[in-house]
View 1: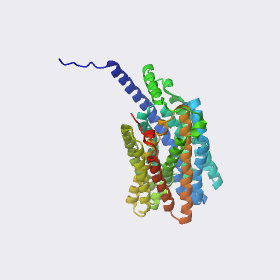
View 2: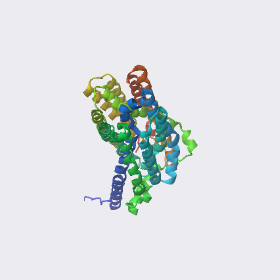
View 3: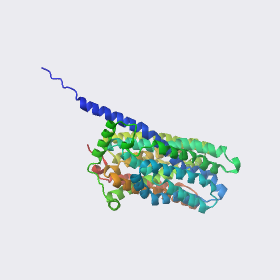
View 4: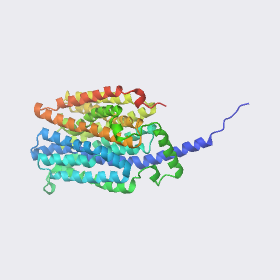
Length: 438
C-alpha cells in the first residue's frame, strides 16, 4: 500500500511569508539605494570629466589634478569609521540624508575653485561630507539580508558605479559640450552644479522614505517582520560582537583591508582616468569620449550581477574575486599597448572595468561573514576607509608619472599590478573564513 506524504503546510506557509517579505524588502530598498549611489558616485568622479577643460582654464598640472582628485580620500579616511558608528547608533534614515545633502552642497560649491589650494580644500571637504555613505549602506543591508542573499543585494546596490558611468559619461560629455560659456561660467563649473542637484533632492527624499530597520518598515506585516528578524538573528549567531579596539586588533580585518586597497587602486585608476585613456586613443570631442566611456560600464553591470549570483549560488568567494581581479589587471595593461586603435582600446578597458567592478559585491560578503552589530559597523568602515586611500594613491601616482614621463602607462602598470596582488591575497584567505559553508 502506497503511503503518500502529506505536505507540511506550516513549512510551506513559512516559505511563502519569507519569499514575500524578501521581495518587498528588495523592491522597496534596492532601487532607491541604487539611485542614491549613482548620484553619489557621479559627484565623486565627475572631476575626471571636468579635468578635460578645467586644467587648461586654471593652468593646473597633471600632478595638481592627481593630488586634488586623490585628496578626497584623506577626508574620507579620517571620518568614515566614526560615521559608520554614528549611523549604527542614530539610524540610517537621518544619517544617510545628512551625508547626501552635505556632499551635494560641497560638490556644487566646487565651481568656485580658482587655485590648487582651493581645489585641494574642496576635494578634502567632499570626502569628509561623503564619508560613511558607501559603508553605511553595506552595513544597512546586513540589517535586512542574511549571508546567502547578501552578494546579490550588494551587487544590485553597487551597480550604481557602472550605471553612473553609463549615464554619467554621456551626460557629462553633453554638459561639457553644451554649457561652455553659458552665464559666464565654464563648462566644468556647470558640470559640478548640475550633477549635484540629484543628490540634494534624494537626500531630502531619504528622510521620508528610508526605514531604519526591519521593525520600522510600515510596509511589512508583523509576521513578515518576525521572519526577517529571525533570519538575521540566526545569521549573526556565532559572529563576533566585540569592541572597537578589538576590531582594530583583528588581523583578519587588516588582511581584508589590504585586499580592498588593491581593489580600489583599480576602481579609482579607472574612474579618474578612463576619459583620459579613451581620449588618448584618438577620440576628439568630449561628447564622443562620454559616449565611449559608457561601454565599459555597461558591460560591468552584467559582470557584477552574474559573478555575485554565481558566488551566492555556490558559496565560493575567493576565486569569484580573484579571477575577475586578474582579468581587470590584464585589461588595463593591454589598454596601454593599443594606443591609436580606438576599438581595441575600448575593448581592453571594458575587460578591465568589468573585471574590476565584479570583485566588489563579492568582496563585501567577507567582513559580514565573521562580524555583526557594532563590530561589523566599525570593521566595514575601517576596511572601506583604508581601501579608499587607494583613491589618493592611484590618482596621485598616475598624475605624477604622467608629468614625469608624459604618459599614463607607468601609472596604469602600477594599478594593474595592484589588482593582481589583490587576487593573490584573496586566494590566501582561509577558505572556511570567507566561503559560505552550509
